[in-house]
Length: 187
Image 1: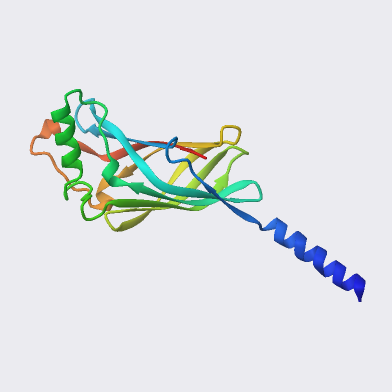
Image 2 (image 1 turned 90 degrees about the vertical axis):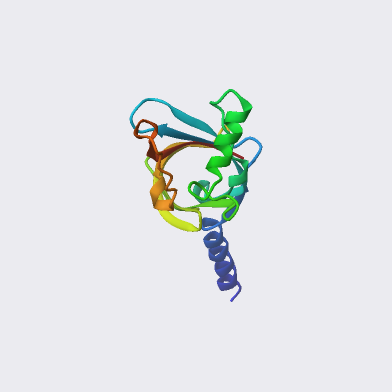
């Protein structure tokens, strides 16, 4: 009987170890989200940053397998306009209902639902992105640097899927439907 109990405990411990998960909280002060909005008919556009409010990765058996990140839409900034009045006008415009409607939807959320590794440090991620109360699935490639405790990625979304419907009154001022993001998440 004693051997059966010892065998059961060993199997239970091995099974628990194989499926152990750990929550890795991100360093919001060192993590960045750069946004890039481009014009449709000529080169140029605007860019800036948005801050993470909080977030974490899920690590299972030494591999990132999921995560959840909250984005503070009130933190949106602009980096390409030099004069403060122009910056303030653009930021206020981006917070309006025809863009991100920040008063009504101050937070956005990204939940990683699937990670498929192509090697130890490169993966294709599927995630649910919620903005303006609308959740849509997106996918993108990411690189994990375990030495630096960092994940980096670049991707674009179609803003219309989240009802970011602003249209310029001038054809030559039309903005692209694609919004680009360059993200660095650090632990």
